[in-house]
Length: 130
Length: 219
Image (cartoon, one colour):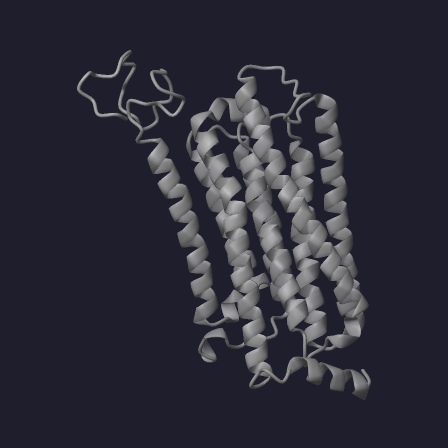
């Protein structure tokens, strides 16, 4: 752990900065609620998550002083994001590529977000086990 | 601030196993960030369950979510954001040696945390009365009751673990308050690190609110 990489939390941020960030956070919360009442279809989730991410980044940068912190702490943040991406990414890619076997169970007509159109009543005879 | 307080702070700031106060501060902060990384994975597991099952049952989740009170959720979001502000102002007070400001904003943060928990307790009680707690007394009026039960399981898991973190944070803030004389411009690392913990808990709620309360709110 290099000294300089975790340097400089002695930087004292002025109160006005904190108040400004707080005002933006409250504003973005109001935006989140208002946008939720609109019908944007699939984009509703995307917008909600984007706004939430912006709020989180503001808290990280200004309230948690990441702006004035060294590279090492940024690296930890990167690891958080990376591991979460792995967890969610691999889990979803498993479940939604189960093809013929729908996530709701074998031979069940159901969820078709990414699975190929199925409703095959019986497994093809030549298929491998699973 | 008396000389003995400053001497105490200098002693705490540079303990013998560290090269200097700076290295101690950096090690301490690094440790807290690593802990927060583990906390991300802790919440992340339940978040992953949420992502998966919401993707599988979007309508059931949407209708179940409508049973949550958006006004209480929004109010609690504002309360937590304000508590993050008071937290960071408490750290500021400590950094510049204004002990009364430091202690006042610590108390404000604790107070707002308690308000959040009180609202949460009210919400939970309401869920019990409505029969929306997963288990033998689950009584959901609507289609897809098993999927709705899944939503509420995830809701209670996420908000319950979050509330537990709030309780722990409030206790730590209380300890800081009672030990306030130990902290000042020469040694405020524990205060800063408690702030990091508190802001993390706030960030978790920043994501929880839209994901749990705002699934299907357009008509």
